[in-house]
Length: 350
Image (cartoon, rainbow, N blue to C red; front, side, top):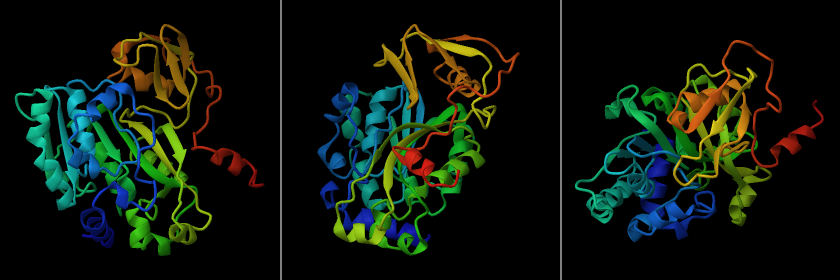
C-alpha cells in the first residue's frame, strides 16, 4: 500500500462523512442530468447519494445487457444507476479500496434490486486497487464497458490503471470516465499534501501527460466528451495551488486496435438512424461529433471505426471503404479542454 493509498483511505473513509464536507467542487457533478437518469436517481437510497463524490456523469449510451466495471465505485451510486440501465440481464461490478465506502454500497444491494423489480441483484462490489485488477481475478477481454468517476486522479500509478483497463475490456469496448485535470504538471510538494490529494487536485494529471499515457496504453485516439473549469473557492487551497487551473472532463477511450495516431481521411461517411434510446434526434460521440439523425456525416477513419467496430454499429449506415487515402481529415486536431487552446496559442513559442 502506497502513501497515496493511505491518504485516500483516510480522507474518504474517515474525514469525509458526506458531500458537504468537500472543500472544493472538484468532486461534484455540475452537469445537467438527462431526464431518464434523473428518474433513476430518485430511486437511489439517500445514504448512498449522501456519500457520492463524483465529478461527472458516467452513463454512456446503449448499455442494455452489458457487463460494466466501475473503477473506484465508492458508495455505489453510479453502480446502482448503471444497474438500472443494463437491465436485469446485464451486470455491474464495482471496485473500491475504502472499506467504509464499500460498507455503504453493500448495505443496499438487495434494496436496489427490489426497487428495480429484479429477481436477484445484478451488482456486486469487490475491495481492491484499481491498478491491480488482475489480483481480483478479472480476466482479459471480460467487460463491455469500464466507467470511473473522479477516481483515476487518486491513483499513484495511472499508467497501470489504464493498462489494466485496456486488458480487461473486450475488443470494441470502451473506457468512459470523468476526472480532474490540470493545465500544467502539479509540483511534487503539492502532490504530497493530503488535503489537495483528497480533493482530487494534487494527483490531477496534466492534459498532455494524460493523452500520452492513454495512447501508450493502447487507447490511440482519446475523445473529449464534456469539460468545465473548476471553481476553487477555498482560500487555503487557492494559496497552495497558485496559478494552476483545474478542469473536470469526461473522456471516452475505445479499445479498437487499428485506430491511427491522426485523423486520416478516406472519404468515408455515416448516417445515424436515430435508434439509440434517449438519442432519437442526435448522437454525440464526443464534443465535436454531433451527428443528426438521417444526415450524411463525413468522418475520419478513426471515427468510422469507433462506430463500426463497437456496440454502435447497428445504429449507423456506413459509406466508403479504405481503398483511397486523401490525407489528413479537415479540421483535424487533438482536442484540449475549455480555453486552454487560446492560452497555448498565445505562448509565443510557435
